[in-house]
Length: 480
Image (cartoon, rainbow, N blue to C red; front, side, top):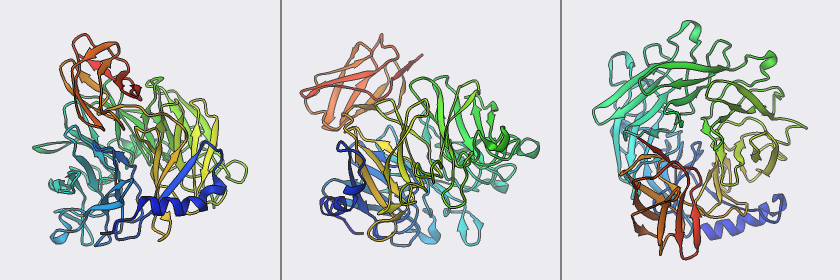
């Protein structure tokens, strides 16, 4: 374990980056992984209840198979856990996906390999784990615990905590047909909700890398990176009752103008539509990749908003990860290739597809994960290569977006407990759900506990502090 000084690193690196900052309002800072604290992070970061940023590195650490880490302003990157710390790596190896903050304040994640059950050359089939902010890890499930691995193997996607507090996710292999599953984890174990490639020629898709979202219609949505009627991947819908349907099949247009290989997950934007990215597209370049940004309605109408790799791929190529809708209403994401230095980019796009390249990497390189927005307004992300030690970086980009509050979960019933995250909530004097005041308790400067009040309706949550009124980044949906 090695702590890196945020300010020493950030200030030293900032000089190197100054020439590539596109506008005076932008401030870019970077920290480097040094192998001991992790390497090659490929999953998105998440803000904890304490306001710090947490994540998982796919490699590095004491045994070279990944870590869970924390980033703080004064101590930099701190290793919380080294995977393969248990005999035969029963605790897992290679956590390629990001972490999910649970309603209990702990983090939940997956490892693509390791665990109690072997399904490859001396490698386990993957795990689901819980880890506290202090670094205590508990393995909740080892995949291939059921005959013929019908429960799936090799989970590579971030988890989703459902309304029932269960964890939902996907695997890229295993299941009834060997091409992955959608699963639900409860205290009694894993239940397979769907096995991919259950239709002839895998028309329903195979290998879901992007995870699930719960949309406002109460259904789950996700992507498969491969399969489908044209082999270019799919977008699917799964009802709460387990009814599966293919919403869209990629490469349905000549030359795959609609894109192919949606390896990232989906988001539901404020307008109710789903947005995502694909690796394939109309402008594929053997060196710099290609890819698209798309919008799809809940009824399955897809629109390609942007095709990457234009003008020598200065706009970027190969967007592996999904998108973020920030508080300004725009979409933000990363490409792992292309840009001024072919090290990838951070981009901003309107929901109509007007794209701006915000940053071209050359110190850190090849971001495989998407970006997140902290409640201080800043954008955070990682690169999988480059930095001082060549094994990746943690980055922050300030664009002048103001602070906001975030509810931990965007759905809830009247009377249900809800946590609100922020950056400076000390002295909070009111919490209001779309015009209806709620009882609350201020736990810390970064956390307020409240209860959805009687009479509350779907809408934004506002929190009044001595510094002003903060609004939630997305509406909170009150359900019956």
